Length: 467
Image 1 (spheres, rainbow, N blue to C red):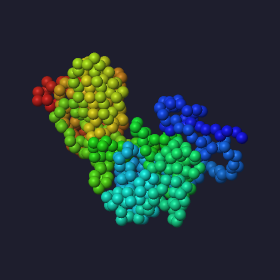
Image 2 (spheres, one colour):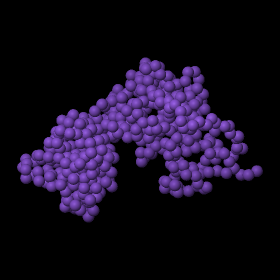
Image 3 (cartoon, helix red, strand yellow):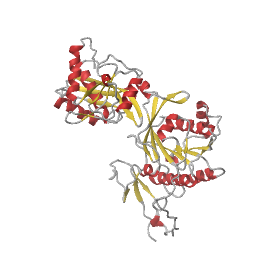
Image 4 (cartoon, rainbow, N blue to C red):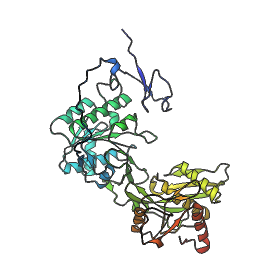
């Protein structure tokens, strides 16, 4: 009788090794390779006789298109992030740091749907029923008809949610606690996670129920387990936030039924999460208008304009290598802006430490923030406060030119709504609104912007710039 063969699978990336090693060849992580039995779970075909398949119905590309029906939750920010609500028969994966509020968000969403007459089942694999009830009482959701269970076995969960009327929404918290009898490995391993997720997705596609799965994240902020899980589901949402701040951001990174760059903003309180209809007022709430090194950036998150303050501090250093510290922005892009300022604008920062922070713990990933970052750096170095009623946006190229960005009209409209009367923006912006030419300054190169900021000291001795 042949000896049973074993596999060694990386729990971080899913790479299969023929023998154990301390370091994974696929992702480079240490101590992530675990021995697993290949005779069970997905991909276990070599251990069993092949099963004869059955033919499926083929159809043509032409024909009637049925619009995917959605289930709106009534929570505006959650519906915005999902593209208008949960799609029936879809699988949604939500990830976030421990304690960030994933279970709170889903409990509030489950209660909102239950109040609208939908059948909602909440399955907890990490907490007992009494613990979930305590959270529901705190959030004011204990009076709803949400069905609750505490179970981790995949087969038992499927048998439970298959009984009676088809559920409209099923919440599994979390996928790392699921285990199946068909996979001979510990809960949380690659094989178990993949098996459990595939079984839940199969149930969602066959019945039309919406499946929401909660996933843990690694220290790098990525959802733990194999990346194939993110490819299997229909939507991937990340619940972000800083423990030092009271707001949370629900960011969409994948959505087969809607946009992938939308965000929903919530504020954490003792009664749960509260929706924030205007995030710009939240991020600009504690702004110091007279401090040098602060610029307001008019950004875009999907279809929503967001105004946020960018803070820079440039200080002389006695160290051989100046320090560059960045919070909320890409450090590589900061290095590029510093190089452009020194090469094309004559701004010498080689003997200065540079600290950059996005106020409120917000994270910017848009290249349009280049001009706001450069303005804040020059303002801090020169000790000149920028105009309090001015916003900045524009992408800076390596040649020092300022490139136009999209959604100019929406950025300016949001700035005017919040009381900003001036803007510094790229020249020849494509969708510039008509009739308000006196409200903004168009620049075509970064040296022009630096000259305007430096020249404001002569025009305004009190430290106030006229734009």
